[in-house]
Length: 359
Ligand SMILES: *Cc1c(COP(=O)(O)O)cnc(C)c1O
Image (cartoon, rainbow, N blue to C red; front, side, top):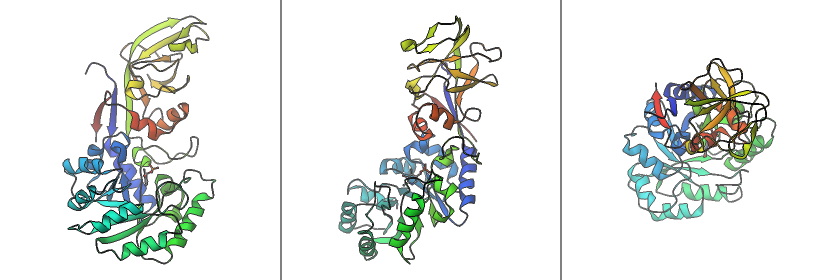
């Protein structure tokens, strides 16, 4: 491989993070959320590696589930987190015994009209304040009741999703838990509430099934500068330096001449850009790791290249490896410099970046 822009993915880190999620909620089964191509980490690779220990996999849609099925994932159940988008999918749900979320009346109609060979295993989603998918609180009891009387259904798990679990100071997670408990009353159904943030911060949301996503990949769901946690970054994004030049104080670097050299400055060019998924929104100062030290982005991200201020870096030369994020530069810090979250950066790494797996 000539252009050496590589994402190396440590599958054991994902295993460790999954086991950590399980240890935080020891009574719960954990649905490993691998939608969005496992947050850009490669859903088939991640699922194949986790399959011996995962309780369930969570994906966004049937296409993602079928990809896992055709790759031979057969022992671990797969949950469609948004359920089906059209009636014809129910035949595949039946065939592959997929689990599905049910969150609107049309999905219920389709279920009633269908004639499955295997009874469905469904998660009924209740909107307790997220304001997105799910039945409203006042209609939920009747819907749950109706579904309980449907012959095509084997098991009903009740679920909700938090809007603010990543904010320790927000009382709203408790509000959502209370609303959920009010609706669910003393029903014996299994429940599923917690995403990564709630697994880590809201013990009283732990129930039959947790749904860890971002934490599996070693990124924190919480704002930067909160106490360190036991997560291990799974992805390291690296490339190499392809040019080095000295500039004078006052010289300007890159498109729009955004970066101004304050002094005589050694600027390096690295082979990664927004066509690889490195965000164009990255500000000057975004950290990169090279030769044991931190250098800073200097100037706008181009399609195929970035420019970095190498002040203070030991003996840089063309060909040196440079880490954009991984164990030396946290994805969460990079995301902060880009006014986004790690989720978005992970899922926007493009196919031009060569992926390697270590385990
Ligand atoms: C994506 C998703 C999750 C995982 O969320 P994280 O913040 O990545 O842990 C959990 N539940 C549902 C319904 C989701 O769509």
